[in-house]
Image 1 (spheres, rainbow, N blue to C red):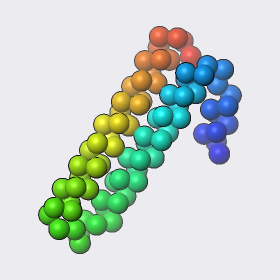
Image 2 (cartoon, one colour):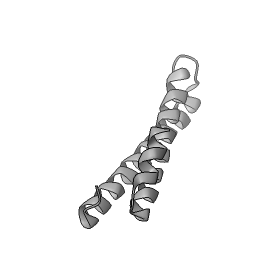
Image 3 (cartoon, rainbow, N blue to C red):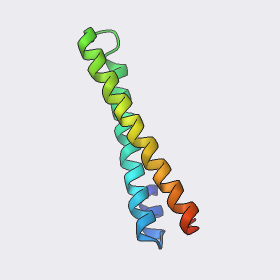
Image 4 (cartoon, helix red, strand yellow):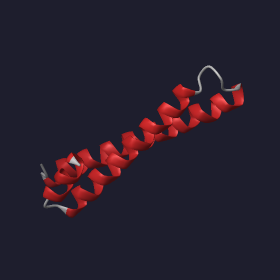
Length: 79
């Protein structure tokens, strides 16, 4: 809910889009890490590698989304 308030207060549509993208990427990363941690003691080696790879991909997407938002804010002086 708080995220939605920040999103709708933004006057810059691109910033709002990037905020949404960052939020979704962070959420996906969180969910991937949670899925992996829930299976640490029971996953086969192949399952663990698949879960680990999903976490790494989600982490990279989250970092990229964060960097894109920061670049936009720096270039356009969006607060």
